Length: 205
Ligand code: GAR
Image (cartoon, rainbow, N blue to C red; front, side, top):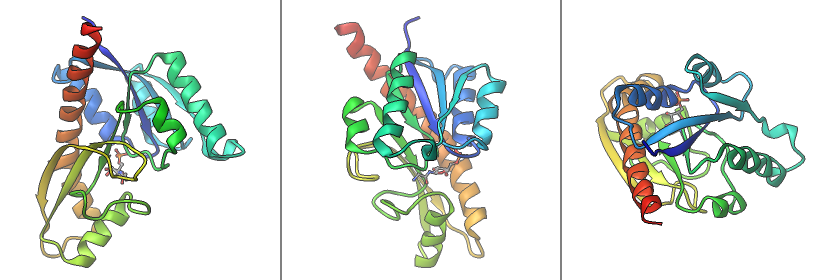
């Protein structure tokens, strides 16, 4: 079966990568196949998850390059050599520049741990997002999967899911609930939706 070639970009523990791998195994992610994982951090547990599942993994730390463009040139080189057609940012902590985005226009999706447009944009990543939500006192938060454009967290929204905030939540407890109840569900689902559409376009070419 013809599938969309997916590359997943990570920087951390990779639980969202794991959700994609599990969806692949379960057959719910069926129009795409995760062929490549690229981590911006050597210590990312996501690299181990890739290895455990026989997925080709690369480690590309940004500090190994003189500037952002050189770093992105290396990412693009890998992605081209692997034939990637869809890039999934799953806990990737580096904001990509227009140079990279132009290479993969409408082919990059990102998972963000809030209901965009709340608590998003530059500086809002990981636990900081949940800290900000708790400080503001919101009663409902959640997660969003969206296309990536030049505006950080500003691209077209694909899926969102709401999660209740509870009294006495800490950022860590809230993060875990948002992951379990929202992120790990909507990321594979959105990924399948986008792959299905890309495959349809590919077949029509
Ligand atoms: C996830 O909560 C993801 O939504 C968030 O980082 C975490 C990565 O966890 N991403 C952002 O904050 C992007 N702005 P993971 O490595 O276990 O998937």
